[in-house]
Length: 489
Image (cartoon, rainbow, N blue to C red; front, side):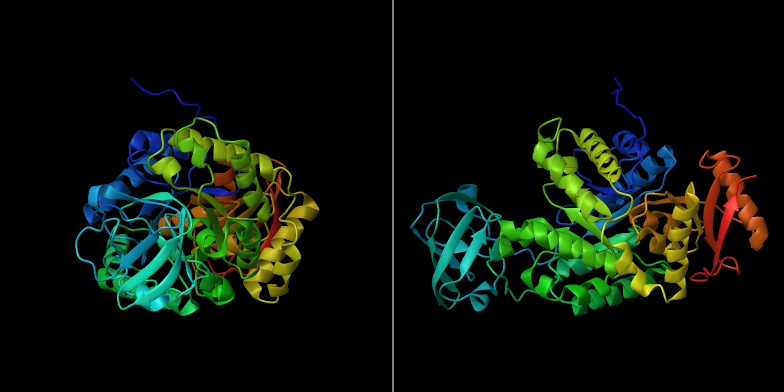
């Protein structure tokens, strides 16, 4: 029996990233999530699954997009050096407040209440007496008493049932683990092979780590003959990343405000202000941002979000984020379609309160001395002056549409490209509606073809004014240098 879903299309500018998992990796469900305009980017969590598993999921996503008649991006999220306790006898141990807890990086096999092993063998070198360790997303905190060789002797600050493989963070940061593991190197090969459009790098601390990631991506792409490289997303979840924020942003194509591990390191109360700062700074430096972690957490088991979750998503939209992300809600939750639909409704409603992203436009204008930025700035100002129905960008790579999107204007931005890869990459950009269109190499003929295509799609009608950006020389990447006010005949 087919499931009846409300497939009414919801128009909104903020993009939605949904994590694929057992709760959502089927063609029919994904097709419906794409059809309502609620799904733009699908996240593959490389902490789980084999290369064959991810390759099969990529085929599912592409088929669902084909049936929906819309392209979506795939983002590979690398696991990174997740620092965890090792396996425990019977799967867990009970920790009582005030009791001694011994961690041993040299322990082989399963741990128990007397001695708990560590997957991250360097932890004893990274901590000292007085440090606070947070386990299981901060549900258990312990204070380090002393470090003896491979052993970390601690006192529990609260009671908790600690399960196998739960994560460990150090309050205030300072763990030496780099951003890449051997598993990440292997997973990167898989991500490139299956055609992922973005790669997210976990636990980034410096811009150099992102530059290293870009070299790694180039090497893998060259080896496989891939000419269009996936974009790089830096996950901001360490204290050190906040200290090096600008350099990391500039070394990346976008950032993810990864609020889970970040909150464990800096404290929950610090995260909202940091979120606003990161989103604003990414836009100022002409990069995109994704806001993630527990946005609709209650919908893992409930068909509607809490009011607090609605406010959380809406505030991220008002902050200017390019995308909001679901994790377990769509990966293993009972209501993946409903979660994405609710997020789409919240985004659309919040955006009605914005003419543009408050406090952003003036900051972006400082870059307008460069031709692509000046064209984008002019397009936005003209669109406001003539009350244009749309801003249209003829683009090879998607960069000109991205520049316009940095202003957060509510006028829809239609990006027409002959490149399927560019179309998928643009699925991440706030306000951009990418369309695949092969146009003439003659500039005037191409403009006629674009207008005809948008009229056919009922984007424009006779008498409508719109702004169009293009290159005097067609089909040249980075060649946008023309800005025109047009009116449909």
